[in-house]
Amino acid sequence: RRLEAELRRSLADGDFRVHYQPIVEVATGRVCSVEALVRWQHPERGLLTPQEFVPLAEQTGLITSLGEWVLRTACAEAARWPGRMKVAVNVSAVQFRRPGLLESIEQALREAGLPPDRLEVEITETVLLENEERNVSVLHRLKSLGVAVALDDFGTGYASLAYLTMFPFGKLKIDRRFTRDVLTRPDCAAIVCSATALGLSLGMTVVAEGVETPGQLEIVRITGVTQAQGWLFGAPMPADAIAGRIAAEV
Ligand code: G
Ligand code: G
Ligand code: NA
Ligand code: MN
Image (cartoon, rainbow, N blue to C red; front, side, top):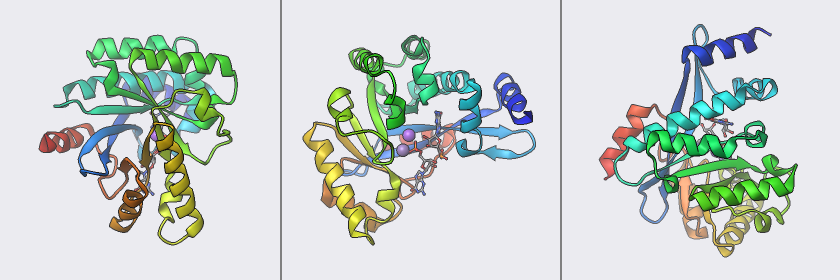
């Protein structure tokens, strides 16, 4: 397919960009972490979002090279930020299942000179569906390296609650579809509330994704959510913009 060839060429030509979205501490409103989100600066079609090319990158296996590039870029960028700001990088199922994942993470940290405790890896529930023993081992090895692992989009996949006891997650990210309706739908409010209680009682940091309004923030604050991410605090932005934002905070 044409798009596949273009994806391959853009990887070689350096047409991908990493944007960064702030994640704030609910108690203080201060940025504590930043999520790396890939973009494709397409030569003709402009800036494309992951929905437009990540599925194809996964089907073709190109997601592994792309993911490793995002990892190296995000670690190198984070190493330049003042303070001890963390960077979170998404790892897809295909990339996670490939041998050499840990080596590529260690190499990215080493090349950037970034301490491992400043990197977080975000995975979704679907990443863990196959090959349980290996997944447990990979996640424990990441933990012993000092790299935190976040369970992304919590509540939208096929995982069972048993996953929370099998894998050493430091962080639970409540999917933005629950945050969106937290003020208007009692069922969503109940899910945010229970997921937060569950995460906190298991010793995890709980993040509400997709916080867009002060009203939503107030609810998640009362609920006890630790950190929040969303347009209220900033949309994903280019590297120089996030660096300015971080510098203004420290
Ligand atoms: O802004 P947003 O459109 O960036 O992201 C859409 C989706 O793409 C999210 O589910 C996000 O997790 C995913 N995504 C963004 N960047 C990356 C990346 O570098 N690797 C992988 N595997 N997924 C990403
Ligand atoms: O799936 P993941 O959580 O990794 O990806 C984050 C996605 O959510 C990105 O596409 C990002 O642009 C988007 N996003 C971030 N903040 C908000 C928000 O406040 N509202 C909405 N609707 N989307 C958001
Ligand atoms: Na994510
Ligand atoms: Mn998410």
